View (cartoon, rainbow, N blue to C red):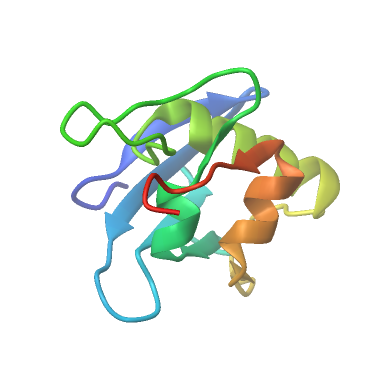
Length: 125
């Protein structure tokens, strides 16, 4: 049961499908969607702004974009989905189930802070 562009990940013996989609408009940069590999009920949907994407990185590490040299999160890496799934299940009581409403997180910035990501000044600031 996969949509185009979904990736599979196992977290604590549960199978999930996830995908990050770039969305370029004035308010949002991208959307991360995570759902059970068995059904799409109760999926997790997180919205990120351009600033969330460009100005954060995990504590103690730096991810540098090869094409710009800027630091930032690469949402396409499985470790991001892994950390978000663990946090959502443990701290936000997210348990996807058939025929349940999705859990929407519109403040990706706060979620990143809760996961231990720290803001980094943009090179132009």
